[in-house]
Amino acid sequence: MDQTGRVVVVGSGRLGGAVSSRLAAAGVAVHAVGRGEPVGEADVVWLTVPDAAIAALAGALPVGPVVLHSAGSLGPEVLHPHRGAVLHPLMTFPPPPGARVPCTLEGHPDAVAVARRLADALGWEPVGGVADRVRYHAAACLASGHLAAAYEDAARLFSSATGVELAVARRTLQPLAQASLARVAEVGPGAITGPAARGDRPTVAAHRAALPAALLPTYDAGTARIENLRADPKDPLLAVKSGGYTPIRAGTPEADDA
Picture (cartoon, rainbow, N blue to C red):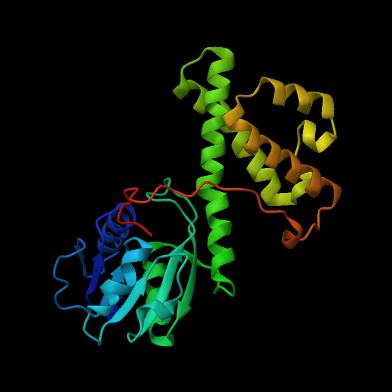
């Protein structure tokens, strides 16, 4: 890792903290600073800040160091005029112990080479570049935040149905959720189970009658998607009808993470 030089990680959120400590443990000369703090001398500047802050921070840096960012929704062009690259981990931080961390690399060849060395030091697994960044990021969000929200809704529903504490409900459903994901990851939509997959409309109707109104849009969307996938496992994503979404409130606090 001697070729990498001094790495300055900008951002004091979960991602910045995790990579700084892991790089230091791997013997990389790393220094962590928060947004607004001086970067100082650096061979590599790694911006682990919210997407909206990256362009301004990159624009304020002197040209010379390689500049990286980890925003899945943005390409390397936001780092112009620097030798820049995206190093985006497909993982929530901090990751569970021993978790596999795939990552994507894209940008200037010099910066990609540096990003690859950092990925190696972190134990991440590069899986290639990105042809359509918006779809890529949406896929990551569906597999992470959206999935987590659905799981939390399931745990709250389970708690209300059984009387167990919410923390117990989360732990109780975990083996089912993990096994379901593992099977789909291995064999695809043929592994999806439940009344929607079986075409059991009376049970689906009973579920809908019992669910709180706030959960019906999620349940209905999931039911429709399961039916589509089981009917045609090669169902193209372009055929999916988009639903209505409530925008996130302006001014929602955002941590220093990509």
